[in-house]
Image (cartoon, rainbow, N blue to C red):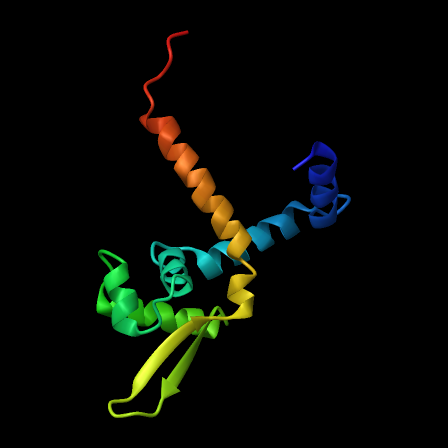
Length: 129
């Protein structure tokens, strides 16, 4: 991204004059919706094609059944995922990402990119100065 384009994007997002209160509220809202240990891994699992509860659970090492159930309910309440009951025998339940959730996709990709770069940086031995 060019410096000019970045400055335009910053000006578009941040108010003038800047409001610490509004910026903090926006950050807190974002962290509330996607924060915690499990929400991003769940979103990632669903976006990678895992639709059924057990598929999602198996794709996320360490998550408990109870925690996954709680997080899916909360994410559905925040309109990040859609729960669909398919009437069959036995009844099937599938979870899919909403378009609202997919609007967060570019941010998740940037977080993955940053995380990979960060891991390389901290694993690398410090250079002598």
